Image (tube, rainbow, N blue to C red; front, side):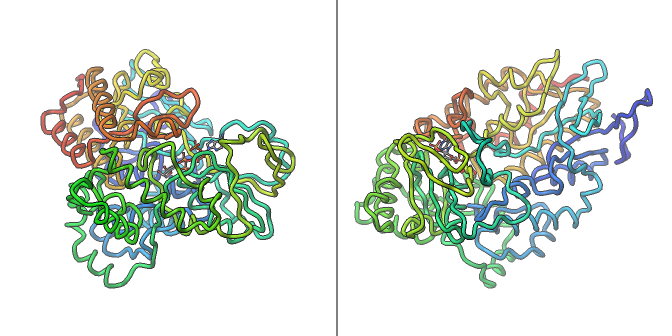
Length: 548
Ligand code: NA7
């Protein structure tokens, strides 16, 4: 490939086919930075985006209360000092609107929109061996050809709407949190049901309760909700952060979760129960992930420490929720804290003290059907005007499997992954030459923007090297894929995360019926993962096959 132009060319036979060096699917955090990098390398890049605007996760998830669980100053790009200095985060945890504005600002600042096709959903991507190119088709009937195909589709993008008999008959309005309307939904005076108490439901429930006349929460598995302790950004904090942004992002890359926080540096067994209690209390006051990261370093690994942590949260539930029976129903007992992705809430448990909010245990009494006027469980019927499904996502592979992706010999990616998400470093997979993934299956459990930047930098350097050396095809070897799946499995098995399977955790694929069961995320630490990726590149792309 000798491309020096950033403009596409038409195919030689004169058919309506656009030809690019690289096609990137997705214009969220990953796709925007991928475009910025590759365009700077002089490549002709086209980004295909199903939505009408940039933003990805922060374009689709507009439900009330949607915000990050990571703190704003590090849930951000670090590649542009200028951007980091000029952007002022309003809150400790940015809400959807603020993040959407931020990503739009990035698109404007770096003039990215001109290379993005909006309202353009990619439906298929087939590798053409004779032409050594990816042939892509879009829902709008577009045909595109590119040497490289990069997925920047996010980790949690394919909404999961479980089958509920009778949903079509429901006469009220229903919504999925991840496909929220663009015009605000007004629940004032409405009887609302929320199905699901994962991170999305936990954020939405207190906000919906502020408007609804009646709110019924249909809970299957109770969760461990740590308070966010959200607040406005103090000017002095902002100044301090901006003065040390370089250090902050370096520190994030040295942390196992890619956050610029210090590990607690202590293990619970070294402390008396009274001291442990004080440390937990301090963590609770700090809120959010600081409860996990700044109390004890063995919470995710040591069953005893975890039992104490889980019990501490249970005691908080009992102390916040007035009604003993409701508190009992809200109390998780079937999985340890952190074995499902830990949620963060704002006034979550307090919401159950409101008279118009009630909690329905649908593990005990499952949802039987959606009627024309509400939800019928095994032992009661509930009249509702609106239903909100906060039922999560088909993580990682779910998003990719929505696209008909076929590699060498017409091999389907979805078939390949039926026996496990084989993807070397979460970046590429054997049999799919010149296809690269930003935060693909097996990427680390991490603060995503930092991992995204690391992945994008790695991919763009890999392509730069391949082009400089005149390489026609790069892909991971079968052994490298298996090596990484083993790493993903081994690292996860050293934590308590496998125990989340019994509570339908998406970290093990267990939230989706019929999906491959097994770890989906690398738990060896983001810091170690970044080092490994750097080593692979330094050692001449060990684990990759390259054909001239
Ligand atoms: P989650 O965390 O997967 O939560 C989905 C919720 O929906 C969870 O409480 C499920 O209960 C519930 N659910 C799913 N199917 C059903 C049925 N059929 N009946 C009743 N309840 C059901 O998704 P979120 O969107 O909240 O969060 C996803 C990630 O986004 C989060 O981890 C952060 O990384 C950000 P279950 O637990 O399966 O019993």
